[in-house]
Image (cartoon, rainbow, N blue to C red; front, side):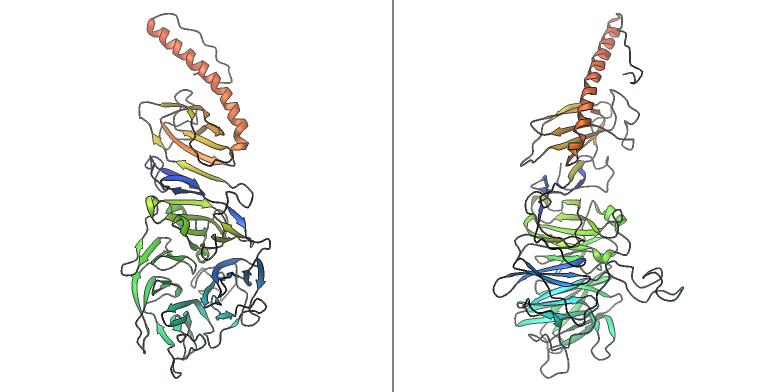
Length: 544
């Protein structure tokens, strides 16, 4: 089968492909269970983390900043520090309640029958490294600086705009600049969701455009909507609004150091953490629940995703700001974690796509609750955070911090032959590094031996999942695996509870084999014109 899941097609139309799975990626054309995760520290974070940011200081010491709805925390040298600003910071919301407009906003807010004039978002953070120092901005608040001293707290950055949607540090050949994307205009002081301001080069406290020698400037993007977030993509800056993508280019002119050109419409960003840059290509999720990519010099283009429909249908209402895009350099993947309405309002599932190699374009998905993720480098492993503040190193080991985790992969229906059935009695495993039993479930679509009520003859008929085997050694028997349509599922963790049922079905199989032999004897006798054996069938079983 080709690598990748194809779940949007019907099971019959997707014949010969993998249809569903959880926590199984594709590696060199074959399914492979994802790596495990181990706790980074025993102490959980305070609050719900939405952003994690790794960087190293001048002594090459790894720092991890965590922005939660109530705290700014730092991990360094195995210890967790609280560096939350003591002034200027306000605790934010955990959940979103919708954008401005009718039917949105928190219950009981505003006048009756009037549209809400305010956006209600979960608190997210934007981070950047100014040398070895940390710059942090909670959404719609100011910018704070931490001076790399664990004994001190972050403090407001002098002269920075009071309200910033997203903060970005742009490294230039001659130094750094801090960008406030979506902020207060300099002259009026009014908040403009399309206003961009940046500090002077190498002076993050110089924001005045009129000061002598200042290279600070202000820009207003054209079009409607609001700025959502930005990312550096090589020497360029990408700025997403709610409905468009702008490309920022450094031109070096004194009056206009940067130029911003719209390069795509109807391809905005669903949330501030829903975009990631790999190499010089950006990947993101849009408000219409499509996946896009963009490389400088081209146009934004949708990414074909054969498992997108469930993401589009089940994304929790008004929680798009929780979507997290992250990369996994080791496996050349981009991953999107999102809140699935089947599980509530918090991130609970993910989709991921391979970007290069023989598995390029192969998508997989899984059930895993992570509210924030960051790729390895400078950390040794990717870092993920759960809703309750537990921090893990990912792709490390083969367990869920010492415990088993569920995975499975399932093929689409295979139409064997409209007029014939295939009898499968045994499965030979070919697993590498198998740990524990793996349950194999063969789902039959039409059982011509027993013709049970729940068997099916056609693709949309009922399903019979009676044939299973637990692969512990060199083979496993299957119970009555005869059908027109068949799909195969490998699974782990659930199989131990099913072993007793498997044994019962194997005993029943022996009785069915006896009935089959008796049925063949009758047919042969009938063809020869001789007497037919008499069959006495117990009342508890259907005649064969």
